[in-house]
Structure formats: structure tokens, C-alpha cells
Amino acid sequence: MKVIKQAEFEELKKQPGVLVVDFFATWCGPCKMLSPVLEEVAEELAGKAAIVKVDVDESGELASSYGIMSVPTLIVFKDGEAVKMSAGFQPKEQLKAMIEAYL
Image (cartoon, helix red, strand yellow):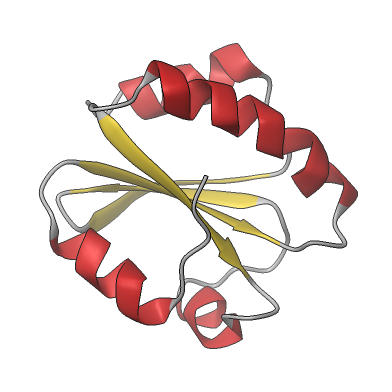
């Protein structure tokens, strides 16, 4: 799964469809637990939703602009608009259902 920065995020956000952004930190235990789950969901939803990661330590300004207060935090964007925000670890089924609701 690709880790992106502000400029790439802005480009991806402009594209139609569903974009899921995982705001994470390399030192975060729950982030490390969520990563393989998110990888599986990304594989299963390939071509339907774009799923990327943003390191809050490297892209603090971007994280702040969305009010990220804890990690991991996922934001689902639909056609460039933030439609769902979820903080903390989630099981695969719950995570996939959350994303599929916007496909």
C-alpha cells in the first residue's frame, strides 16, 4: 500500500470515486495491527476504491487539516468529499463494509 504526501493526496482527491486514506504513525501499535487488514481489503476492492496511507509524522499539516487527533484514523472520500471518518482498529468485515457503503 502506497504512502503518500500532501501533493499526491490533493491529486487523488480530485479523481471521481472512492478514496480511503489511512492516517497512521510508524510507532503506533494499532496502526501496525490495521495495516495487514487494510492490505487485504485493498486487494479485494482493487479497481473499486483507492486505498492509501499518510504518515502523520511526515505530513502533519495534512493530518491537522482533517482534525486527526489519534491514529489510526481512516477517512473515506467520495468524489473528493470526506464522507466518513473512523478512528481506531477495525476488523476486516467492518472495515470493508464501511468502504463498500460508498461504492
